[in-house]
Figure 1: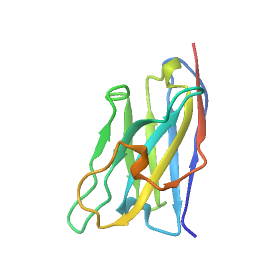
Figure 2: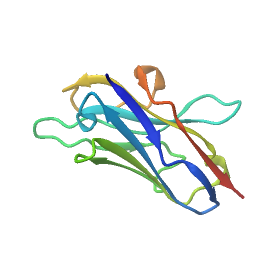
Figure 3: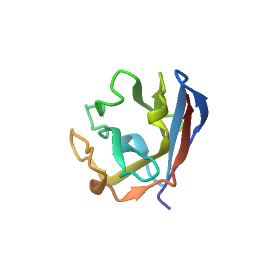
Length: 132
């Protein structure tokens, strides 16, 4: 069964760090296009970043939204079939539920989507709260 599950959220102070994990089951997650998104109460779901799936001679390259660029980093863990979102320099405005998602397209080629509508498999999310 294809499934995504996020973990690693929590409560941190301004300036703190968290590592969020997106675990895949039923498929090899690093070879698929994955997006990270977040949604704060009363706001629309917004992109944090994305990374394209690995190809035969290609390793996925991450993209980031302007709001998290230079603070957040997306990486892949091939041994655990997971993706990580390293979030540094957290701010109160980063408070949200964080989701990972995939479109489950293998060998999709370079490129990933920052539009949540392009993804159809989602995890349940993990809450990140940053106190001021």
